[in-house]
Image (cartoon, rainbow, N blue to C red; front, side, top):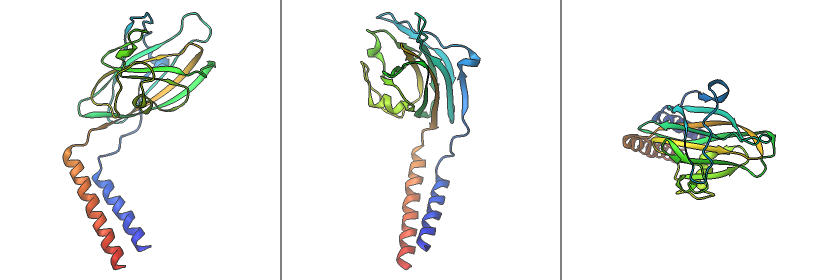
Length: 213
């Protein structure tokens, strides 16, 4: 029992060495309040600029919207851009995916590309970093990192600083989404050294006290 208490103290001590946790979630764009995102150019050689959703901050950045059209002849696609600031990284995109109407059982197209536009045509999706057919909630960045499912160059998570554009498309349903972009500061080399030193120190303390007990 004594050694268990020491482990708890060690974990608490290490927590003091870690960077501060991100604050509460911030909604940076909600289509219901600020208007629909840009529609994609779906021609074979289509390149689409995105509506600029905003600069991500060191927190959870939320984007809400809907896309797709299960009845009308013209479907609603969403194209939006965002920026990860210098010294920061995108570690996750936690997606809440909801089918509002129609049948999205085959999955909805999600693509991502570096820069302020994205290839949205049959002949241009190869310029995407990654893309995936999504049919459920989950970590979208992990799905991108496992892809691309179609043509694309591939990406490695976390994503570094810079501009990125996403393209969302669905042909048989209307889909609602909430994306929580988890952004954090890139740890400085000194912070990693401090963390490793703290781990070693706490490990020595726990072993010494355990041996004495």
